[in-house]
Image 1 (cartoon, one colour):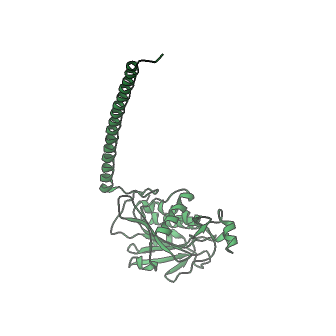
Image 2 (spheres, one colour):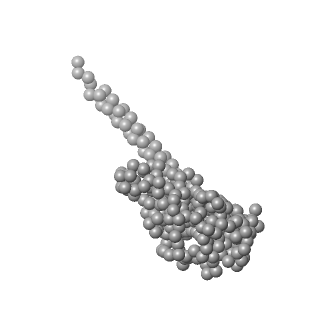
Image 3 (tube, helix red, strand yellow):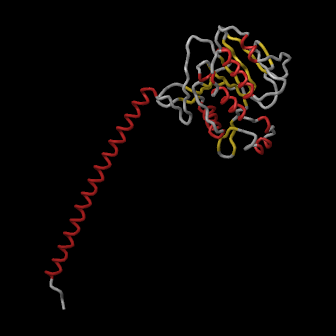
Length: 284
């Protein structure tokens, strides 16, 4: 038996109405989503604008490196540290560039006929932590820190930078510095770490005394007495070797001294110097 056309047409009509309702519901849902999206974008833009205003107001943060507070005291003499012969060398290992060290790249260094024991960037890391964590720096008497690599690359580290505690993060920062030549604070144009031109002496104050350290020096002194003998109007520049073995040979040092009858690490040497300076300047 053939079904009447009227019934068939009626069902089509109901189906069409159902589709129309679904389309209307989809349009309403889409409008709601669009309104929600626009409100989220508006809130995000307001948050970004607020953050931008805060940055302009004086945010002093470096990507991955916080900035340490310090009591900067103008018109006062201070101290400068120079880390010489730092083992900071970048090479392409596999598909990426890395900061070479004796632990992770021993096989690579041997293949290239180099001594792995000479590649110790951790010495620079420990020395910088000793300098920047010292009460002398917190009191604002640290004027600058300069690091010169074994290859002769010279870069400056600002006193208010807090170097990463872990070596892995530190190596990433140094790798970025040696590739991009500077690291800038967020929201500011201040370069907290930057590669600069040699010689390092052109960045020293006019009235400064340059002192080098060596275990082989015949002049063995007690650090506290040595710095007390220096006048209050003189800026002190200490040159410390940041290599595993050897002796620093610089032409700009006025004096070469030994501060212990035993060989000391760079970090230990710096600790003795900062402790003596803290006593001299009454920094507790």
